[in-house]
Amino acid sequence: MDIEEPKIVDLETLIDSHTDDIDALQTITANHTTDIASNTSDILTKQNLITASTYLNCNSLTTNHLEVNNIISTSQFFDTIVLRRPTGISGASGNNRIGIREIQCWVNGVNIMIDNGLTSMFASWLNKEIDIGPQGASTPSTLAYNNVLEINDTSTGGALSSSGDINNALIIKNIPLTLIIDVQALVLYNRDINNTGQVIVEVGI
Image (cartoon, rainbow, N blue to C red; front, side, top):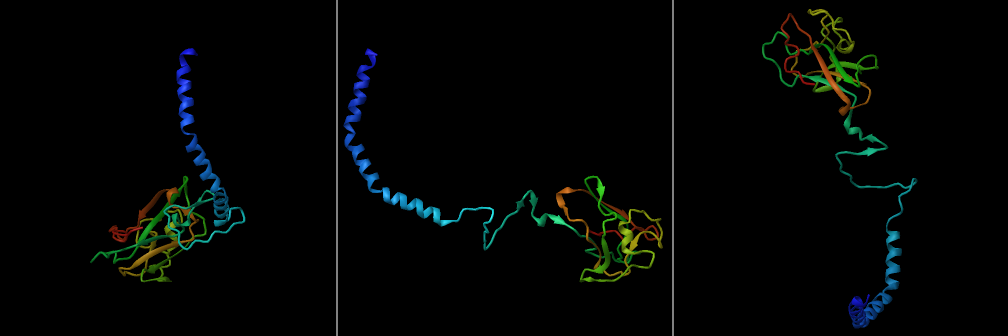
C-alpha cells in the first residue's frame, strides 16, 4: 500500500482540480429538472399505450408478409384454380378446346380436390361469369376433379369444353382456402381427342 500512496494522492489532486466543473454541471442539471419532468409527461401523452382494447388506424400499410395470431395474410391463400389457354393452336384437331382427364392438388399428402364441395364451369376468359357448357353431357367440367381417370376416347375422356374459342378457360371454385406454400404438387392428366392430345397443349394453370 505504501507504494500506491503517490497514485492515490495524485487522484485526490485531480478530483480537487475539477471541483468547479462538477459544481457547474450540478447547477446546469438542477436548472433543467422541470424541463426533464415536463418532457417525460409530454412523451407519455403522445401515443396511447397499446392494450387489448386499443384500435389502431393507419392510412396506408405496405408489407410483403403480415402474420396475425400465427395466420399469414390472405393474399397468400387461394381457393380457385383456372386452366386457361393464353394462345390458340392454329389448325389443331382440338380446335382450341380445353380438355383434361383429371387435375389434382396435393396438400399434406391429401388431394384436396376430392369431395370438398367444389364448383366449376367452362367459360370465356372475356366473360368469366358465363358458363359456356361442356362439349356434351358426357364431358362436364366436374369430371376434371372426380378422382377418376376416364377412358381415353372422344366421348368419355374427362372434361371437355364446348367452344373452340381461343379464350377458353376451366374455372374451379370453392377449393378449401389453402396456403400456397402448403401445396406439394399440382398433377394434371391430359385428355386426348383421337390421340392428338391437342386440347391441353399450351394450357396454363
